[in-house]
Length: 277
Ligand code: P6P
Image (cartoon, rainbow, N blue to C red; front, side, top):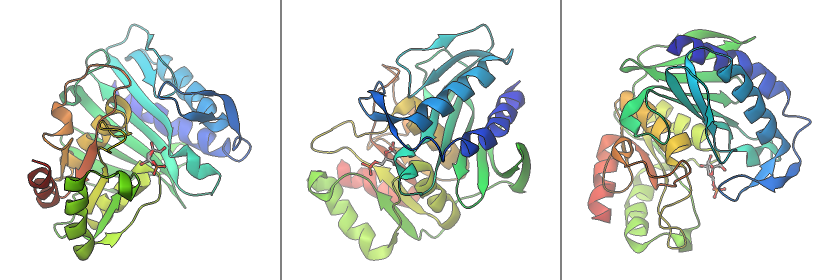
């Protein structure tokens, strides 16, 4: 059941990637979060909706690109960011797909995730999956997934950091935290959450898109980005926070609710929560 959902995402990935070159232009519409939508966003969303709703195990499909939930009659509820970091298409940088598989109707709390995954379109295409208490990295080739890293675990010693938003827009307590972190770690920020989070999963460190003075709830969406990525990082031995608590414990109130996102090594998250308290 959950496996067929992950297999469908893996099988769809090559088609999404092959469709990118001709879809770099912005469409006329905005997504429900008021962000300009690329033709590639619409393409990825329509492919994933079609492939996932075709499965008996999928009871609903929701995406960052659509205002509502598309209902069906299966057991699991899938939340998708079809092309996270799509603004990187213009500059030919990494991006990919985020999928959360919930066993409750959406919007749902992160503890009801039964599997989370992201497909990363980098120099190679990989799929990182949290399921049954473990994280596995797969190489995707011709739609087939081959496990290349089993029981993926965050390295103990953090090396990299990446923080979104503009420096003058960071609240003073977060800016103070950054002053200590930037003395210790190397900056890695590329504008696509999953690529930046994959740096953290690989080298250890922290990624954050924090609360901003101009946007106290930050930028990233709980259902489609915060919950699945927190599930992956926490399953890999790290921690997550909205500034006060695990992202998986944030109360879901709206399908497109935004949340401040901080994920990475537990020691860095503990220091962050102390700095913001
Ligand atoms: P900014 C991509 O649009 C995204 O949703 C995340 O993938 C990424 O972390 C963030 O927004 C980048 O935002 O403000 O740096 O362009």
